[in-house]
Length: 147
View 1 (cartoon, rainbow, N blue to C red):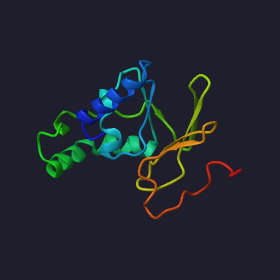
View 2: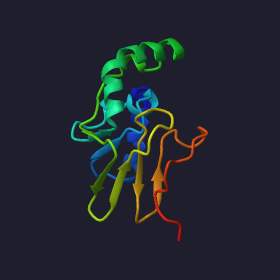
View 3: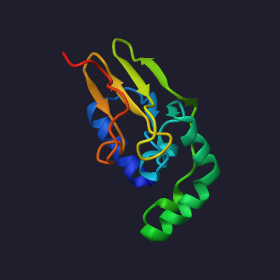
View 4: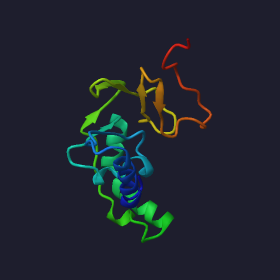
């Protein structure tokens, strides 16, 4: 999320479906539209990032914010964005049990950034990705075997 307004919209959409707490937030890359709304989620929400994403944000957050303000102009909410990086880093794979549903957070290598992650629910065969498709690079390995 590049700014608080978009993160607030996402939280509002989640609240239309459930009142359950937001427990985990997976940043699929270090780009602002993937990670810069983290600060608006509850402090109890666990932020999950690849180590490269965490390092990049810690080193480049202020420069990125200035760049985005210059690109998108002031008044878009980017001025209020605050850095919030990972509570958990995932170099390769993390499995999270959500109580009857397992979500695997995986790193398959560089797609658009060195820290691209995907979230996969094996039982539902649902895959959430960031900017991986459409970048001319195939996924390095299949996530599941075709039936």
